[in-house]
Image (cartoon, rainbow, N blue to C red; front, side):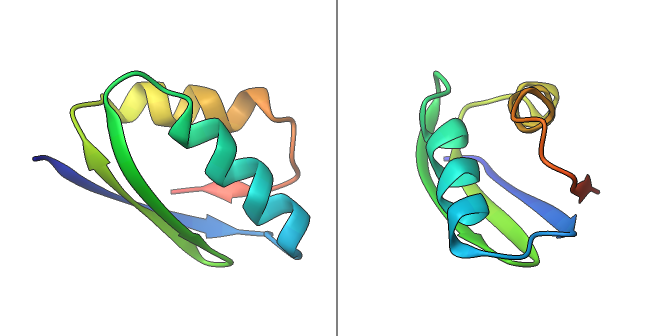
Length: 65
């Protein structure tokens, strides 16, 4: 199983964390996601570009690295 890490800047509350978690879990190929205020750990066969695109689609004022 593939593992990817994302770093965040600007995540401020539980609602944002929940929205990020839901958006990532809905992607094909994602097996599990752990999201916190400073990043996410994603397990599964999914491309990094797909993860980034899903986060951008949320329209949250966060920076993803």
